[in-house]
Image (cartoon, rainbow over all chains, first blue to last red):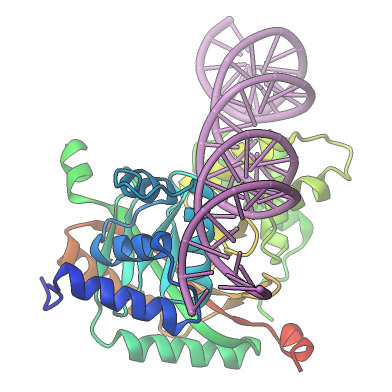
Length: 155
Length: 155
DNA sequence: TTACATGCAAAGTGTTTGCATAACT
DNA sequence: AGTTATGCAAACACTTTGCATGTAA
């Protein structure tokens, strides 16, 4: 898809840099979680991440997964998505600006990269500040619909 | 603000119409909850609605509040907002197109009415359908920032 | 009258927390 | 060495469910 085909090593490097750039200690768990998010764009839940990384030798508690994800979200390089279908929260490494489509039937989440997304976003933020007096920091757009698979099932 | 200063009776009428237009039985609980949402734009949680409507004579269980809200959301005339600060879900009667700003400090939610919102939204949906093959139905935009009150506190 | 909504309480789920242990700088 | 993160399990909060009762059409 993209020119993002970095070697495993490079991804690990990049992840380590991101972690240290935000003043966090570089622990195996944080590294593993971040690498997972950078290499998987399936919008996993904390539970999914926990299951997948538990396959390796290093053990990681579910609480640590939650804590780590919250830390990443607070620092801004990972975002949360609530799809409203299940009660759980999904996560996404926020590399380039994009938004999400969520299937109202099966909950599957896909990325959409929108041309001029930056411009539209900053306009909306400007308007928001004007109308409400809030100082805006970020935005989050979700579109709801029916994914191709679920369209087939409905026929 | 708007020409929406309807009498209590008219709101009740409108609420009843919405309920019946969606094939639902018109129960006192549904009416009360919908009227509450139509007349309060404080983006309440289920708990808040439950507390407020419990003040009147008619009693309503918390489970009914949740069930009713879910029904309304499924039918599309009420929307859910997860602000990510607390773990709870907020609700909003979706009269005219708008989006929300959420204070990352205190969680307060405000409405923003954006000019040309419809156009931007339909463009985004078009792009989404093209890129992902989803059939889109609705969208949900959230902006995060700091509300005026919390700005003062930070000084 | 018949299907559907309600209320209660219990169960369920996802997430957070307290504390002792372990690991990073 | 000192601070900070981890892991476990218990605690939490929000939401859903089962079932008997009540109510709208």
